[in-house]
Length: 221
Image 1 (cartoon, one colour):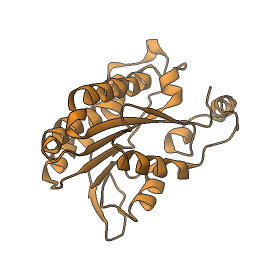
Image 2 (tube, rainbow, N blue to C red):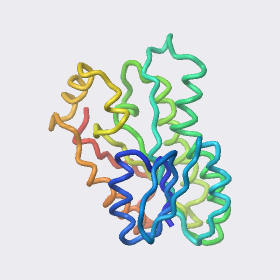
Image 3 (tube, rainbow, N blue to C red):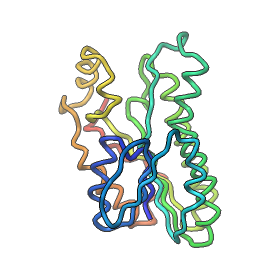
């Protein structure tokens, strides 16, 4: 069973269409509802409801993917505690809570895949994204801890580091910044989201793929 959090994002929609052809999916989002025999939808008012949803699921194997992302986009000295809390909650704490709930049951069944969605810009660092970077970097620490402590139970963790895609986060940027950022990708255009789901499928099918960072960013520099 693949659990996709943030299922309303544009990137998630491409992956859901691809993965639902051969897997049972649980989608979690604020508004989106997908049709299909392999898809179960949960709509939440906010992601604090997530633990209760995860505790109701019954399966012998789980794949966790979180497409939720948020960036307050402000300089360090202007970053408020509230903005930092929001960025950490949406970029990291959702994954942290999911890992604490899913891992205990999956230790018995010897199968679980954590696939974290990150950003090459966030991991490299840039002006005005301090709290966004903090959340995405924290996921790498979570990944390493899962690998060290639970790999022997058939549980793996990997990260997809994305470049620039047509997402709500991208659309929120001003045109001048978009132009500047695209120059850091050799293709100088937005990436094709159809590349994401096949990599997810590869990670699901091969337990030796573990503790990796997959850069799906068109060679972002």
